[in-house]
Length: 214
Length: 97
Image (tube, rainbow over all chains, first blue to last red; front, top):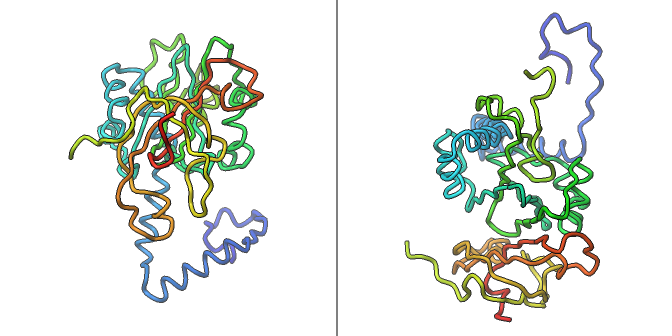
């Protein structure tokens, strides 16, 4: 496996050797066998990869930004999340049952899957490693405020924390609370405040657009 | 499609069965034996305990959103008394309290 895929200008770089793990080797071997035996075609694999890559937290950020900017869209999003996604060209049809949890001044939601790693992938893409870890799955139900604290969010007792353990078909998405002082912002600007972690619920969204992103 | 009908209604107090059986179970251990309020019914879904073994998961089972006060689930939950924990449980794991 060499650097043959690089363009001419990049050959002076010494790329570190990329050693495949045992699991990766096995997966590639199985893939080769499936292709060889005609069970799958290259195009089918690539289509699936493209489909999975298209799903990212940017989808969720767009939904949230529109919900913040347009109260009627927000009502539609809460009532029928899959239809609201379709309105915005986001394909959420693979979600059996989709529920959006609205954060308010008085209530914050936190989503976990203690049993495995259920996650609203069409809206947020692939779950981060910490979400799938035993550590998070244990502590999110027992000590949600402690977990939030580690993500930088300290909540007073007057705010209620609601943890949702997605044990079945329902996939949950948190609709974060719109930060104060954002009245003049466009939807694109609002979307830049919405982080993946704020849609899982471990932390509030950004209060202002980060440096270098303005 | 008919409106899904289940045994329990929002507001009913139910107990999660204190049971253990082999196979793929989606009722977490930490909630078994606990009692609290039915918040709503999500609808009817295929049974994951059967799907996990390659079976068809039929008949569909009612799935409920059950809400618990954290202080009633965990002995040492020291913080806010109003904090809640919501779990999605299938009807066959619930009984009226």
